[in-house]
Image 1: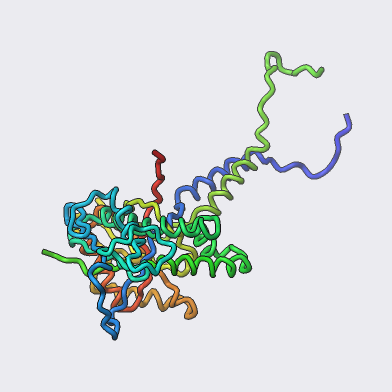
Image 2 (image 1 turned 180 degrees about the horizontal axis):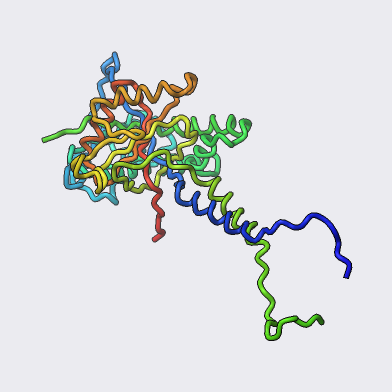
Amino acid sequence: MPRRKGAPEVNAGSMADIAFLLLIFFLVTTTIETDAGLDRMLPPIEPPEDNVIIKQKNIFTVNINKNGQLLVEDELMQLKDLRKAAMAFLENGADGSCNYCQGRKNAESSDNPDKAIISLKNDRETKYSTYITVQNELVGAYNDLRNREAQRLYGRDFTKMEAEYLNPETPSSIRDDLKDKVKRIQDMFPQKLSEAETTSN
Amino acid sequence: MIKSRKKGNNVPGISTASLPDIVFMLLFFFMTVTSIKDYELLVENKLPSATELQKLENKDQIIEMYIGKPTYELASVLGTEPRIQLNTRIIGVSEIGDYVLSELFKKPEEIRNLVTVSLKIDQDVQVGIVSDIKEELRKINLLKVSYTVNEKIVENH
């Protein structure tokens, strides 16, 4: 039988072993990134020059004590009711200047979303997970309202639009278009979440 | 039909020629979706979960900080009070300003005002130390923070 002559073939049998070794090495030394979070802006340390007087009815106070109980507007509240209560407060629209609000226009509650402030206070001994859950509910209240308006105006969720806008891989033409929309929705319900210094008593 | 030379060996062997390809594919997958751990964690870090997340884009605009109890092995040296880890160091609350600023100045000048501090805080930590950290960050005028959390899967009911 005639044999074809040429370079002898390299034995690739051990290739799989080498690749497995590399694979296992990478599995051990690397981690999958979990970088997502609740973005917050801290207040600057210098107090604003003009001392704005805020009416008490425009402030929605949320207190968390060290046992994780919630005191909302001087009443005990369960965590699951917080989002609804915050939404009702934000879109109350007592002075009638907010034409997209669906609130009850209660004179005792906030004038309009622009003036409504949520103030979150907590004890030094509050557990961090409770604190994050409460923050999450409050951000959720804003997001729910913004989503509703974005659905009405543009037919899609605000959170999706914002994520696409912030994604650096989005082409700039789409991003410019989204910028105005995102800005408009944000201005409808500006996020005014004040984190006061914690109390220790 | 070619008869097998050896008697009784009539089951054809499975070809493993494509095995390296498959494994390499897996390897490249893991290489792209993961990142190398820069340093060992010295504190416990079990993140709480939340639903209203925003992704942190641009890894280079982030300063990471871990807060939690020292790990079991280090508890005898560092105690059980929550500690702050920045890069490879355990630092005290009063040193945060200096260390974060020195981290900040390692970054290129044009992105310095976009830097976000990613706070990776263990869920069992008490909020007291968190507000101390926020206070220190306010002093050095780094106001963008992000509480890094895991995504919670919402069940429909």
